[in-house]
Amino acid sequence: MAARTAATSSGNRSTEPLPAIDDIRAAQDRFIAFWGEMGTRWGVQRSMAEVHALLFIAGEPLSAEEIMERLSISRGSVSTTLRQLTEWGLVQRSRAKDGRGRGERREYHEAEQDVWKLFYTILRARKRREFDPLIEELGGCRVAQKTARKNDRQRQHDQKIDELLELCRFFDGLANTISKSGKGIERATKILAKLLGSVS
Amino acid sequence: MAARTAATSSGNRSTEPLPAIDDIRAAQDRFIAFWGEMGTRWGVQRSMAEVHALLFIAGEPLSAEEIMERLSISRGSVSTTLRQLTEWGLVQRSRAKDGRGRGERREYHEAEQDVWKLFYTILRARKRREFDPLIEELGGCRVAQKTARKNDRQRQHDQKIDELLELCRFFDGLANTISKSGKGIERATKILAKLLGSVS
DNA sequence: CCGAAGTTTCAGAATCCAATGAAACTTCTG
DNA sequence: CAGAAGTTTCATTGGATTCTGAAACTTCGG
Image (cartoon, rainbow over all chains, first blue to last red; front, top):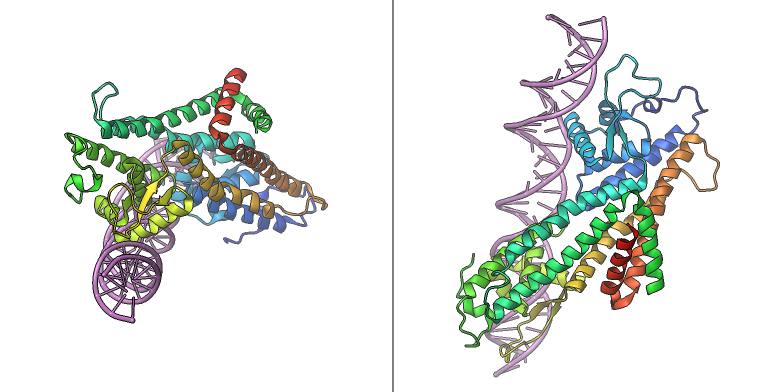
């Protein structure tokens, strides 16, 4: 929305004939809207997803103000959102960039561009939020200690909880293994795929 | 809440000394509350997660009314929720059960008890909702056809989209492979884990 | 075919959650 | 060190979403 002269946020200084800046903006907008929509389904606030989408697709550092105007969301939102994205490791502050920002002290924000890192970061964040609590709290849903004497119904109950716990622990271990395989997530996962192909 | 004589919903007919029915109810309540809480983080309505939790942990078919009273949620909620759970394949209608329900035509609802199936069903549902759209719509976020002539910025843009698409397709393929390995999800995943262990 | 028991629907109420934006705060430049 | 530019915070607002519950509908036994 916030219609602005397209050139401002591109930093193009007669680099190209800039015939199709609007095409790019349109495509960016589509991507931003789509990513924002997906965000809501992924349990991420729309505005946060949008800011990330913008930074990712722009591929260059932007200031809070530029983000604010481009997405027409409030200062507060942008600030909160940027902090969170930074905490997640998806966005980095990057002072000065390109020709601009000489005398400025404005802070710029730049999104991780490696899609594998992006994917992995998201996965880790979701695991922390949606999975780890399972392991942490499920135990408290048992009737009694493992060793205690129980009647049939109690045993049944605890068995179900234990089955869930076992399942969770298994996937937790799997996730940890993958995450420990360092930068080789991609490699590991591809090997994994190959293996699966041969199993089926 | 909705305090009711504990015996009613258990169908126990002098089977056991029933000394600790309340313990079980308490544990069930903990589990239900917890599962409901997790549900909200998983993008599932609290009441839906609670109904599922109850049916799962109870391990026996319950009628809509029993669910309603036990969880003290409204008729409408229970109905909607059961329908959805049934669509997802997590709950089955099961007419009559045990000694009761002879002359009745009340419908009973029973939750899938196999935790692996449970897990897999959830995963599939989430994939449909959170992942498949990515592959479907991401292409529309490109600037132009792959073959079209582009300037640098356009090429950059489309390359990012394509990288995302590739990543998504990869995981989609992975998921499909796993899902096609029939009932052997558990087996496949465990093999996979072993493999990863040896890779790291 | 009638009455009873159960289920579903849907408009409105209540709740929850994210976005706003002005004010407070921080940090840099001159 | 003062002033300016930028960033963060937080009470309030607004929007969206879920839950309710009475009424309509369906199905079964007699």
